[in-house]
Image (cartoon, rainbow, N blue to C red; front, side, top):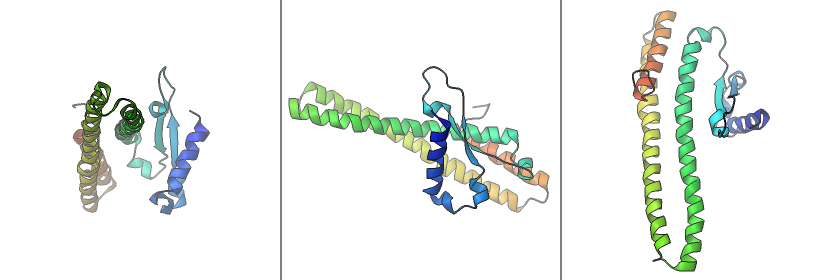
Length: 181
């Protein structure tokens, strides 16, 4: 995994999504973080998105908050990796299935076994999809609505910091990523 390759992918992703309409100063703060790989790691394991937060915003999005955001990102990233792996397995199995059916017919024991594997893979994909939907719509969207409400009633910077910290704490708790999970 080379930094310049990942940066190119990030730039293409930013240009190819609604992020392209964000102000340039926001896009300039987006980056990547590559961790030191361990034996057996792939690009999925050593990559993280990064966002540079400077003053005065760093008073609200402090180092501890950034760490919590990374925790949530890593969970969502792992789920996407699982989804990608299951879909990639499906693509490979489909071509094997077609070859075996052409060679052995529909009733061969291998085709029947692969059908059971396909059902198990589909169930895993269903669970993964449900977890992603829960995180996106119940956890993140619900917490975001609460944060917006809390920010609207904030009267000081301390209120804003407390609301943001509670927002992140709620996300971690609902995503079962907290210390008490």
